[in-house]
Image (cartoon, rainbow, N blue to C red; front, side, top):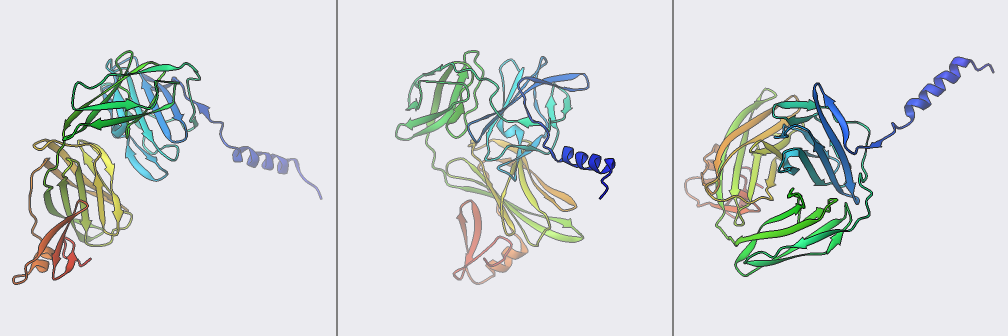
Length: 358
């Protein structure tokens, strides 16, 4: 059998392209876009805590709509996790994920105009700082209303520090404040933060515990999707603990629908089951606060959105054909709020706001 030189070259080419691209650790690596330059650091602490640090010689005013997948398929807006240093020269994005982030849009940075940077495709997630120094953790007791504690008195760079708050009776935790020696804020997520290469100070504030009556603000919108009219019923519930629950339902199957809600221009994915999607905030909101928001439903071939100016705590009823059919003229029906979702109960049966029996 005669094997030609071209055959060996073909095999070598296949093997070359089959090999993985060498990944590298990004630690203050220069990334350019036209005349603009940033210095990018990408780190992972432990198995599931990620941190992206963007440094610049010019002021960083914020991010544009930059998105990633975390936890394999969960679409998130980077602005959800963003903090900016007091001198506006450093932006930090810290989050928890079971998988490395997958950036599916460019990185848009306001410097102050929006500049578009391309994400590197060869990021290796590790530690930039191999420093073994034990940095100190100082706890400043709140002036009143509760006590706080941490699980360490010192920690090395990248170690996770867990915080505990014990409110007095009638009080609840308001905010954590963790700062380094330069007074830069350290992001706290679910009572934990990753230790910087610096000493830190921890304190917190408490506020009166709230137990409000849930307030529901509702509406109906119609949109033409794939040549047919679809009815969206939506609701915003200000919960007893001052969090907000967003709910939307639709009356027919929509191929590839991905429901989201944007609060003050930051997108949040909604959990979906059948023809209904929900999202509950971690943040709390005071009654009377005005939020600019919209429901955004992307689907195969397009997207539709419902724009709202919502005042926290306000209430608005709903009247749809489906609801009228459920309530009827003779039999009394009852509205039931469960897990932030409003239902109608009549004759022992439960219906959605669209009139569909559940």
